[in-house]
Amino acid sequence: MNILGISAFYHDSAAALVRDGKIIAAAQEERFSRKKHDERFPFHAVRYCLHEGGVGPDDLDAVAFYDKPIQKFERLLQTYFAVAPRGLKSFMMAMPIWIREKLWIPLEIQRSLDECHINSEKPELYFPEHHESHAASAFFPSPYPTAAILTVDGVGEWATSTLGHGKGHDLQILSDLRFPHSLGLLYSAFTYFTGFKVNSGEYKLMGLAPYGEPRYVQQIYEHLVSVRDDGSFKLNMEYFDYMAGLTMTNDKFAKLFGGPARPSESNIGQREMDLARSIQVVTEEIVLKMARHLHKVTGEKNLCMAGGVALNCVANGRLLREGPFENIWIQPAAGDAGGALGAALTVWYHVKGNPREADGVKDSMQGAYLGPNFDDEVEAFLQAKGYPAKKLTGPAWAAEIAKRMAEEQVVGLVQGRMEFGPRALGGRSIIGDPRSEKMQSVMNLKIKYRESFRPFAPSCLREHVSDYFDLDRESPYMLLVAPVRRDLWTELTDEQRRIMKDPDLCKRVNVARSKLPAITHVDQSARVQTVERDVNPRYYDIIKAFGDLTGYYCIINTSFNVRGEPIVCTPEDAYRCFMRTEMDCLVLGDFILSKADQPEWKDKVDWRKDYVLD
Image 1 (spheres, one colour):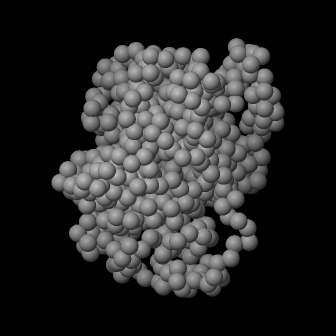
Image 2 (cartoon, rainbow, N blue to C red):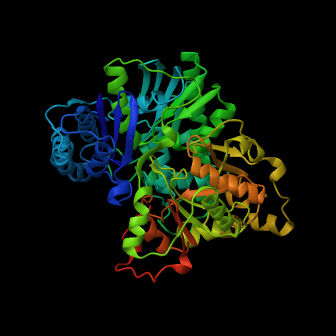
Image 3 (cartoon, rainbow, N blue to C red):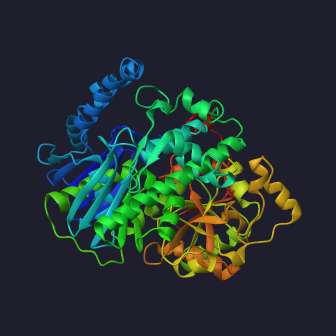
């Protein structure tokens, strides 16, 4: 049975194909359209999934959309009526889009299938609830036969977080928290107020938090949110404007925190750092309370998580260290994109009642490598374009890449299938030497063209993770933050301690805090990815070759893109990004390209205007 899952119309639209319970393909629309967080109907992603699965004209049995649009429309109307006439401007902006697109999803699905030459009259059409799709994406691909399930995001139809329980092929939502009381929207309000983009810049707020002090925590609890012991809470809506207006916060919020929101792209001050740290602490404490209550209710030792807040890897790391669960598994595409996969799995397991096998060890996400693979097309691409490259295979390929990284070259890597979810995991990555004291600032300012304070993540071999981090388990999807081992820390000089108190973030970033300075954040932590040979053998070989050469089986891994650009998909995307930046080397499948050997690159347009800054 072929089931196509779809998410669309809010942010991070995507498609996924499930065949008889096996995940065949999944991809976000942004990777094909080149519009970051593309919310439009995922025509390209649908075509890719059907092509990857070899789905013929009469082979598609069901289509599942990741939420119930009519219920969401009902919530929208009720909200506007409740705050009228204040929300009139927002209402008038939203209605045309709903009337033109969002209420006609079955017709959009039919049109998409017709364009793919699929019999659009055959498939059954299903609409699971938004958080049901999230919960399904968390539990069904997980390794656990039974587990507690926690989903937390901005809002679905009405729910903003749910507690659930999964057993075999059955999934039950036990309780939920409802709009407007939302941990995701609370975090997004601070994202907005500190000058970052909502639904995009939340991870920047998380990265900024360690630079600040939690001096606003008490104010948040006293004025903004009332939290119960079970993790449920109520927001004081007097301080927020997202129900009626076009902004997340209002003047009362600004007065509480000493002035208006930081303008985007302006200097980040100590207030913003302290606000980031404070809301991060509050978020972690609420998630911990939710998890502890869920543990009491279910008695499970395993926890599965999804929803946008599940991408807060700092909170995840703390939950693993301090929470009641022995094991945690987080859907790598935890946001709305993963809802497409969850919707398809809901139909196969929960609706159709098909049996589910889970061995307690290995998940069914295949390392999240569920996108297209262009390795067989690289040679023809290079020949057609006339781009000089060197072809290497086997150990020589990995050794050459490792050698270049050890020479402090920045390497763009495109090999194998593209990742599903927001993290690059060695399929579409930029990699480098974590021992380099200059690598973080070089990558941020000359490659990624992004804020200097943002940390880079390490990829390390699974069997060596405890050599570098206080982590005793796998973290294949880069969704856990762990402390760097104490014996790797470096003693700061008096001058470095002085710099660490400097209000200029750029100066603090360049202070080496460990023997792996490029991946050690200001609080001596790192967002860890573990790599195993049977999941991604070529990426494993690169890290092993680097370790054999340097003694460190750990490298830098960041997504292959510049700020505002989706992660690259095709060899052409990768070459364009390679030539537009100060990257030294590009790896396309078996081929290695040196920047110095390439013909002069001339952009026909100002590419920095192509991408909306996130």
